[in-house]
Length: 252
Ligand code: BV8
Ligand code: ZN
Image (tube, rainbow, N blue to C red; front, side):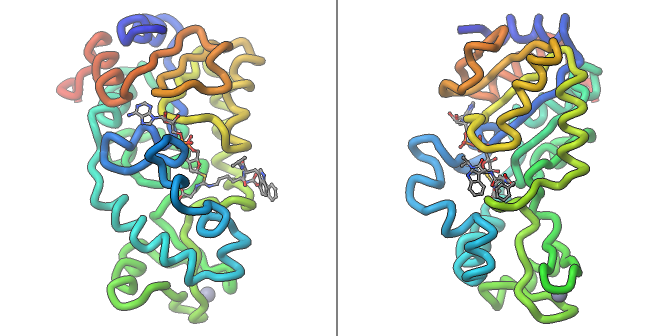
């Protein structure tokens, strides 16, 4: 298994890195991930609450899950890992963060090149008329209702996240695919790499001749193809990498 200082050397030599993050990036901010033993899917059927079919079939059921989820995400704070990636971007060691996370924590930590391939809780589209509600408007409605509605046509709006069975935002995915093919180093942080099409991105990097680094608490399907696998908590490991590259947050 690799160490944080070995990872720092790889970032220095093969960077600027593109970083692909998943739910494991935010567990140390108090947001449970999905597929760890303590993950969200341990006690709820993802296709009942996070698939487009479920939303069309029973939007109220989906919102009964998403309403509290949004509150929990907004109560979370960026952790040292999010702060380290923002510092590494400012220091020129990170080119962009491609994130599967919908929690907005990378942006709140100061990263500016953030590609949200699974959408986010910043927007809430209406599938009936195409209007969009803001997070503020939704939060105001959630104070008195279980499912927020569209101010134009009164239909229940959908959370602005990519649900199972939904296509990913084409512009975000195109940008992500280009970045991972062009980069000398793709660093995967906190993802089980089981959800497609994002799970195909590390293979794109390797096929294009780039190097792969994985920072994850558990094994992933790409460990064997990685130059380095660091089996450690993302917040402290990334903080150590940023310090080793003298890209500390105080270099803001
Ligand atoms: C699509 C948003 C084309 C909501 C998410 C049947 C019907 C339809 C589609 C499919 C189907 N069968 C397969 C598919 C494709 C499907 C898919 O991949 N399914 C999987 C389950 C097999 N994909 C889709 O549906 C995608 N769309 O393909 O459209 C299409 C259209 C129609 C029909 C067919 C195809 C849409 C995928 C996006 C779904 N939306 N969430 C929300 O977030 O609320 S998925 C969800 O999983 C999140 O986005 C999450 O980010 C993503 C990936 O999970 P991870 O981030 O990797 O999290 P996970 O818990 O798995 O892993 C965390 C890791 O971190 C663990 O390994 C853990 O050990 C580690 N860790 C934890 N803490 C730390 C840590 N590591 C370091 N430090 C720590 N502190
Ligand atoms: Zn509408």
